[in-house]
Image 1 (cartoon, one colour):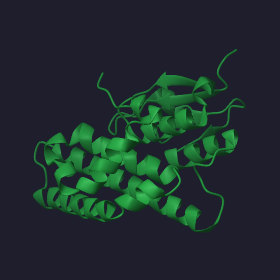
Image 2 (tube, helix red, strand yellow; image 1 turned 180 degrees about the horizontal axis):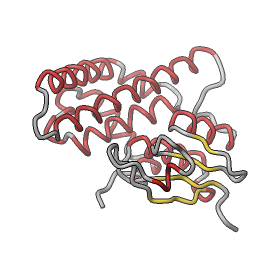
Image 3 (cartoon, rainbow, N blue to C red; image 1 turned 180 degrees about the vertical axis):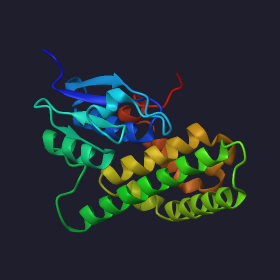
Image 4 (cartoon, one colour; image 1 turned 90 degrees about the vertical axis):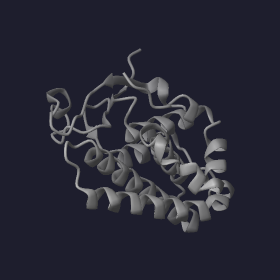
Length: 205
């Protein structure tokens, strides 16, 4: 039986990783057909554009041909499809999970822009400094919240923060974020023992 869901995917994208972590946690990986897709900013991909004119991943094509994007929507859809608990239904747990989800995505956005600027032939130093400042401030805040991250029920909030920290490991190894946020690093090391995070480590190639 063919997989009912098609996911435009890359093992290097932290946004795709977020979707895949959710899929593993929810037991939905067997329902996914993974289509390796390159979504370079300056080279729109016609295959992705056929279903998502923005040429971005992740993009999910459902069994009826309808399309969902981006990772925020796809993760919530997968949770609803599986009847999961990654998105708390109500009350303070919901707001904390959504807050961490938004913060983790915002940190990822800053990191990707920082990396893109860093790789320009002549990077703008003020931009590099601004991205570094935001990242250091984000790490300080998350380090102060490490105990709460560990104590709260596992949700999309921890998934997204974990994917952002994984991207720091993958693309900013020399930045040494762990020394700046030791409590957060301890929490992340425990998080990385989950099978969903072990199965979705970013790889080159």
